[in-house]
Amino acid sequence: MKLGKAAMLLGALSAACWIGTAAAQNLGFMYDSPATYFNAEDRKLFEEAVRTLLDKGRSGEQKKWKNAASGNGGELTVTDSKRKLEGRACRHLKIANYAYNGLKNTSTLEVCRKPDGTWAIVGT
Picture 1 (cartoon, one colour):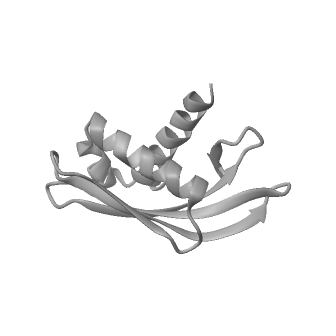
Picture 2 (picture 1 turned 120 degrees about the horizontal axis):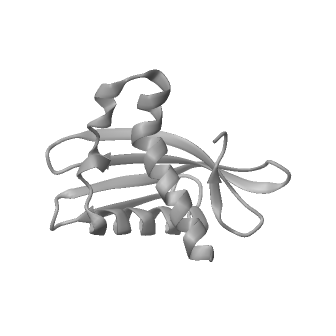
Picture 3 (picture 1 turned 120 degrees about the vertical axis):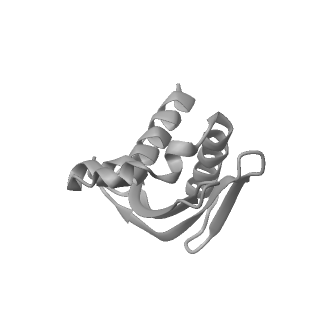
């Protein structure tokens, strides 16, 4: 059950990073982002890096991920850690991904740990 919730958060992170901004601002050109070129292995590597960094990373810590087979990858950075939202831990996560074809995208999201230990994007 916990894994399913983590997968939902990571899916939401992916959507928020690459599609959410475009939809919110009607910027259709942003749909052509690195994530549109990610395969299943890319998503797995990305999700593992996000989960590890949110659970164990310190403020300012970075984690890189790369799939040598596809040429896709990225770098994640925890830019801030604080207590917020009813005493729960919250973090700012900077996500900089790239695709094999040169596309790059950077987003920063605020996520907070839920009582069950999973993470949720704030404001969604």
